[in-house]
Image (cartoon, rainbow, N blue to C red; front, side, top):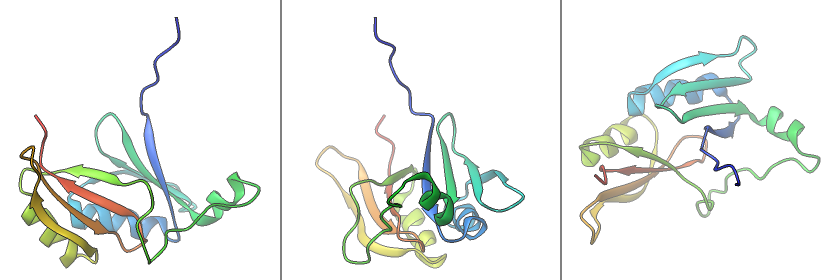
Length: 132
């Protein structure tokens, strides 16, 4: 029998880990688990699956050809999805703390409310109502 994987964490490479942690604390109300002494890595408490940030230098060191930084033109093929009861309020708060609007809150055909922002470091963030 093949072992089934479970998602352990998501890491975004950013130019400034403490600034990323502070943005997600203030814009989305997340609590920090820690920031490494050398500020090369930090983690937020987001439940069983952690959201973390690492320096771009660490990202460059992990791969011979480096990594692809976010583009200002279009979002990448991955997003961080954060769940809120009040997506409209979360969207407004994100913009007040430095996020850029990509798509205003909209009710989807299945009833979920979804909005999209880009964090100050270029990462695509979906703000969504619960699916349950």
